[in-house]
Amino acid sequence: MSAANVRPEEARPLQRSRLYWAFADGWVLAKRNLVQIPRIPELLVFATIQPVMFVLLFRYVFGGAIDVGGESYVNYLMAGIFVQTVAFGAVTTGIGLAEDLKRGLVDRFRSLPMSRSAVLTGRTIADLVRNVFVVLVMLLVGLLVGFRPEAGVAGWAGAVGLLLLLSFSFSWIGATVALLIGSVEAVQSAGFIWLFPLTFASSAFVQTDNMPDILRAFANNQPITLIVDTVRGLLLDRPVGPEGWQALAWCLGILLVFVPLSVSLYRRVSAR
Amino acid sequence: MAEGRPAILAEGLEKSYGTTRALAGLDLAVEEGTVLGLLGPNGAGKTTAVRILTTLLAPDAGRAEVTGLDVVRQADELRSKIGLTGQYAAVDEYLTGRENLEMVGRLYHLSKKYSRKRADELLERFDLTGAGSRLVKTYSGGMRRRLDLAASLVYSPPILFLDEPTTGLDPRSRLAMWEIIGELVSGGTTLLLTTQYLDEADRLADRIAVVDTGRVIAEGTADELKAKVGGERLELVVSEDSDLRTAARALERHAKGGAGGGVRTDVDRRHVGATVEGGARLLVSVVRDLDAAGVQVDDLGLHRPTLDDVFLALTGRAAEPSEEGLPGHQEKETA
Image 1 (cartoon, one colour):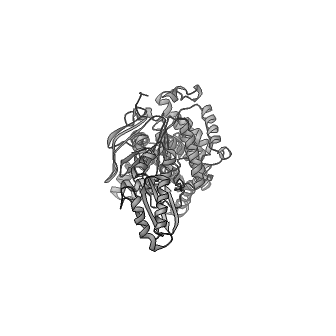
Image 2 (cartoon, chains in turn purple, green):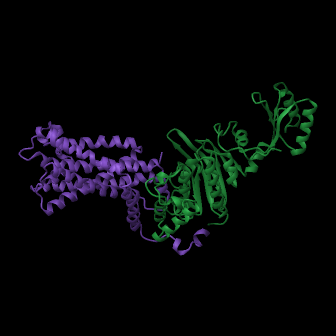
Image 3 (tube, helix red, strand yellow):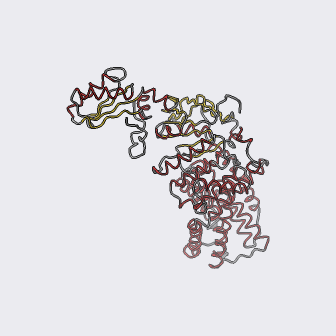
């Protein structure tokens, strides 16, 4: 094209590798999503209030009636709250993406010569940062209601690392759900449908021993229980068994499946 | 680009959504540096065509190329040559105007410095400098559209697609948008524009493709399309209901194709219209005939056919029954 030939040097696109642009474009979009967090404070407030209510509900309403075998309930509870909070971040990812779809922004991005994964990595990375903040608030609330972790530096590093990995991997599930379903409202409801059984039929709030056989078999082998047990073990400085590696393997496995799946859905997604 | 090759070419495009057939063999060709108006009612398939040409959607059958690049196989390469402004302002509400434009520049892989410079240039050009540091959610509809159009121009793409750029805008913003688009086109950009507004296509496009139920039913310059309806229309309103029939009979003598040739009467409005040829001279003889027959006339005029007439002539139905309230018919010249 003649127009391209007369383009002045400064107006020409930079030439870099495909991999470089996957990161650079992802970062441009992550920044876009991050600067919006303080501009929509109500979103962050509600994302924080809900888990705070769960802490208060389980600590003071149900807690007295739940026996966790010698451990103080609040110490048992907090690992479950952290994991639940982070896992539900997947819904936020899905809603954000569904809104971009609805507003036609995804159409604009898809018509640009940018990396095909960037809209998704930008979104999931921004939600990871948001989750760090929310978990910090949860920790503070936990300490206020009597949570007394005993972890050393390695234990904290392991627990926080696993929570971040969970946040990131579940965000990709949320993105996939949004690309499959599309509408903001449906994404919201669907999120609760798959996340409620996962987080409640688990060791997040109660020990799985008292569950009926079939439910217990599910609860003991699903990723949330494995992750909760690992985080709990690390925070309370208890020995962590094979569930540590299993938890890690689940998160990585989820990424291996849902990253390529959501990117391929994104390539074909249609606004309406 | 290969000589003589159209900048935008579509051949036999088909696309269905479930049982709904959006495109049923659409053919298009747009020469470099010209403007094609894709004109049709809601649901005619215009947006689907744009989505295919801008790589957002793969066709079920047929092929299309833009600047010689196949929209499916060479989609990645093509995206750096096109700009798209969709049907609704695709800008981020929670970014400022400047941030939106800078982000698009970065995603075209322009340098940070140039993206910023370009954002400032475009804000200035689109009269948004004052609002550049405000969040887009505080913008009016017209401002959003201007920002949206600016975003598609960040890279000055040689080919631009505008999907209904003025739908939903108030008349003043619409005129402002027309002026901006007119400037772009005089700069040599190849433009494909979709619209439901006949006057918009007439005003902006070099050639017009009329789309209905997923295919092009007529194509040509605005004048060629108008010629299809056959010359000018003579319209008159009589003072007395009882004169309507006499006036119609008088017009039949002058109508192109003789009696019944496109003479339409509307009793409620006491209106008679007919397709005629012969300009002002004919007008004089019609007046003489009416006078001789003793018909009192409230209004009489010779109108160049509008694209509304074209659509009616091509499809047998109105393009847009709900066009009242929009600035639509000011191009009618009363003789």
